[in-house]
Image 1 (cartoon, rainbow, N blue to C red):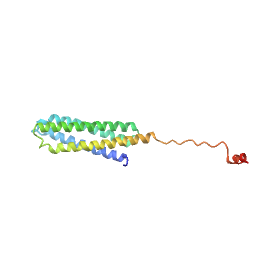
Image 2: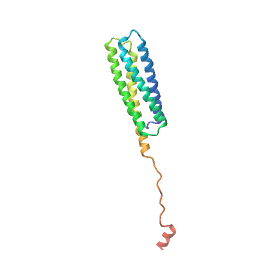
Image 3: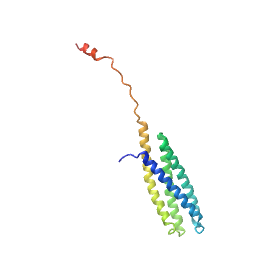
Image 4: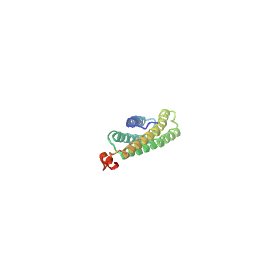
Length: 163
């Protein structure tokens, strides 16, 4: 299996950022629906999560694009894992809220989308962690030119010693 590249991580970050923006739009639409007051607190929580997701993926884009530091890439991978865990917890919480308020059918597409996004997030997090390991390996194994020492004895002197 080939190691992940910078382009893979940039593409994942852009996709995850677009997902965060779509989540913001979706949850603002839920808040504006006057007939579905039962999930207002869930939508407010999701807006906070999506805002944090956008900020972390923006940080990741900057780190991956411009930084050569393995430590910053490792921080981004840790933050991304945290976001994925929070998204999984929120997906379960949202499912419980909408199913207990008998509006699951109305929010079925959103619920399915959240679980699929959570599964993709786990895969994306693995790719980002693998990329951070590649960057760290490359940073730690930079070859420095070694000093080549000239021998003390020349070829002519060796021939004279043998004779």
